[in-house]
Length: 238
Length: 238
Image 1 (cartoon, rainbow over the protein chains, first blue to last red):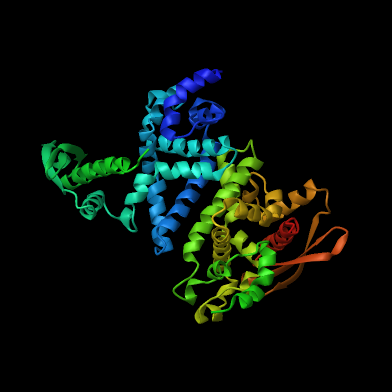
Image 2 (cartoon, each protein chain N blue to C red; image 1 turned 60 degrees about the vertical axis):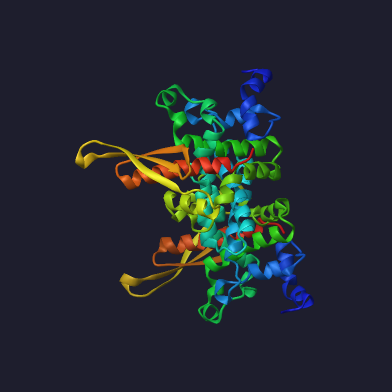
C-alpha cells in the first residue's frame, strides 16, 4: 500500500488537470484501475459514472437549446459522451500515464485504447462524486468545465456532419481563415494507395495538421478531425 | 388557459399520488401533454427525465449492491426503467386520467399504451426537477419512494428469471404461502387454443389473479406477472 503522501505526490498533476482535490485518493486509484490489474477495478464505478455523465450533459443541452427537439438533443448528447470524445478528454488529462493495468494489457498498449481511456474518464467522474459525499453539484460543475469547449461548438445536427463540414462552418461562423487542404504524398500501389494531406489555414501557414487515409477524401477528413480536436480543446478553458 | 385555481383542483389527486406539490403546475401540464396534442408537448422533457431516472436508479443500485458487478447492475437497471415497469407506475398514478392527447390518439386509446404512459412518467420526473429549481435531491427522493417496493424485491439476475420463478422465490424467501395455478378454461380450436389460469395462494383462496395465454404455461406466467405487479406496488409505501 502506498502512503497518503506517496499518493499525493503521484496524483498531484492529475488532480490539477481534473480541477479537483480528493479527500480520499483511494477513490481515484480505483477509478484508474483496469480490470486486467486485479479483483478490484473500475467497472462498477464506470457504470455509475456513465449515468452521471449522461444526466449532466442531457440537462446542460436541455438548458442550452430551449428550442431544439428530443431527436437532436439525443444526437448531440451521443456526440459528447461517445467513446472517442471521452478518449480525447482522457488524453487531455494524460490519463495514460496513470492507468493501472495488468502486464498483458500494458504490453499490448491497452493504455492507448479509446475504450480503456473512455472507461477511465467515466470512472473518474463517479470517483469524484463518491469522494465528495455523493454531491452531484460538485461533479456537475467539473464536467461542465471539462466539456466547456465542446459545448460551445456543438449545435443541432452537428454530429451528422463530417469533420470537414464542421470545421468549415465553425470557422465561417467566427469569420476566421478557411482551411486549405494539400496532398503532400501518395504512396502504395494503385489498388492500395495511401494519401497524406496537409491542412493549413489562409494567412497562417505555421499551424498545420497532417491527415492520412486510403483516399484523398479520407485523408482530408482525418486532417479536419485533428484540427477540430485542437480547436475543441483550445475552447476548453481550465 | 385554465386558471391556477382550476389547475390546482384538476391535479390535486395526482400531486398527492406523486408526493409533490408543484410551484408552477404548467410544468406538470406540459409533462402530461402528448405530442399529438399540439406544438408544445412532453418529448423534450422526456429526454431529460430519462437521464435523471437513469442516474438515480444507477446510483441507488450501486449503493444497494456493493458486491455486484457492472453487468448485473446494468441488467437490474434495465428491469427497473424499462417501458413496462414505467407504465405500471403510471397506472399506479392513474396517469391515463390526466394525459392530454390529440383526438386521433384519444380515440385509438393511446392513453392506455405502455409507451405513452412510460414517456409521461419520465416527463413528470423532469417536470418536478425543473419546477423545484433543478434540485436533483428533491426528485431523487421521490423516485426512490416510487420505486421503493421494486427496489426491495430486485436482486442480481432477477430480470432473467420468468415471472413464475420470481414469484416463487419471492414468496419462499419470505416464508409465505406458495402459489397454486388452476386451469379454469380452455377455449378455441386445437390449433388456436386460449387458456385461462387462476392463481391463488395456499390458505388464501380469496386473493386470485387470472392469467391468459395461448398455452397453459403462458397463461400461468401471465397470472404470476399480475401477482408480482400487485406485490411490487404493495411493497411501495406512499
